[in-house]
Image (cartoon, rainbow, N blue to C red):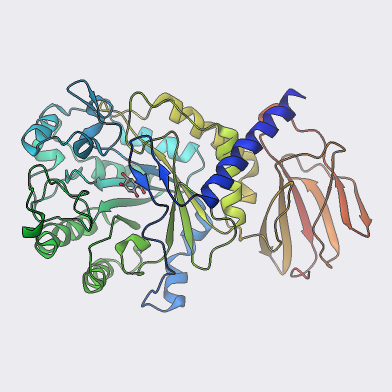
Amino acid sequence: MKRFNTFRRTILLTGLSFVMTNSITAQVNTDGTIDTGDKYADSRLKSEESPEVIAKRLEWWNDARFGLFIHWGIYAQDGCFWNGKDGRSEHMMRNLQIPITEYQKIAAKFNPVQFNADEWAKTAKDAGMKYMVITAKHHDGFAMFDSPSNDYNIVKQTPWKRDPIKELAAACTKEDLKFGVYYSLGRDWHDPDCNSKDGWRSNVWDFPEEAKKDYSKYFERKVKSQIKELMKQYHPAILWFDTPELITLDQSRELLALIHSIDPKCIVNQRIGNRLGDYAVKEQKIPGNGEPDPWETCMTLNGAWGYHKTDTNWKSSDSLVHSLIDIASKGGNLLLNVGPTGEGIIPALSVSRLGEVGDWLKVNGEAIYGTTSSPFGKMDWGRCTKKEENGNTILYFSVFERPVNGKIVLPKFSNEIKKVSLLANGKVLKKESKKEGVVVEIPPINSDEIVAIVKLELKGILKL
Ligand code: FHN
């Protein structure tokens, strides 16, 4: 009964967060920033490439379903604290209005000697993730890579003098993971020309005269140079842009053309701005239904993206697995975030949560990887994902809430059933055809199974 209550609480929590994030239009993050949902995703993608080109580019990404997001920067030096003050997140420089002259002193102390790229890549692999996206330059303007065009970078400014982006790109290749980089387009608190639409999101403490700032100078001087460096030096499979409020359509087009002139296969998210890009981003929320465009939910494991040493509000592995299934059942990807410490370590609780999700995927990953969204409407007891193989159909029913009588009624279809089994162990399940639909008996699941999955093998292409 305890398990069931835990289950119900998880559902409630998941449900609650599900309902909240679905209905919520603004949320206050633990760092005090206000997320008005996806301010950049208020409209459908209007890509200027053919759907076939984009579909081809996204092939591996659509199969992957699950990736690791990494927010790592010098703000992690003391867990987003500075001089004993709580900077609350990777926005620490703005939250505490730290002058550039002071902030860059953090770089002079940043020495993550325990960083091990192979370990990070293995953590992602063990979690069942298929790709990784790491912050190459976040809002503080500090490049976490060797940037010949701009000395404000990890190789030039720190005693560590190494290039973690280069090392991680190599480690991902070894682990057969796709490697991606994040780049902040509309926030750069180190650059005198990077302004912001509402004035308060830029560096107004070192550069108070907002009207004198010229975004196109920052774009030409820093953005284009560094995107070219990132593409040529690391050959990322994904360029994950952020905060595109000020970029013009021409600049978004120019950036996309620059990226694809170097690698036409490089995937770009919609935060390149102006409705361009290959897929839509949902931040910290899961849409209520499927989405018209390819999409990905990015989500923190606790309340902050960067390592915030006092934030121990970790999501449970149950809720993470539920989120992954829910997202896959709607045809999306989950990009789950970790914030490594100033020593270069992914926090132990993050690693253990990811490991628990990975353990579940080792047994049930077939129901996630390479699947497409559910062909059915809402089911109150769980979710569904789908595969077509050799002209036949496989449906994976994830039972979030096992009914008290242990029986679930499957949504209606007209195909002949080849087999109904428990995915975890292949055990054939009892079924009975009734007028309301096929009733399947679900055995009680063990406490460590999180979610039981019913594998339904049907003859032919699905006929509802
Ligand atoms: O302000 C950033 C935040 O620090 C983080 O990088 C997220 C990740 O999607 N993007 C912005 C908030 O929308």
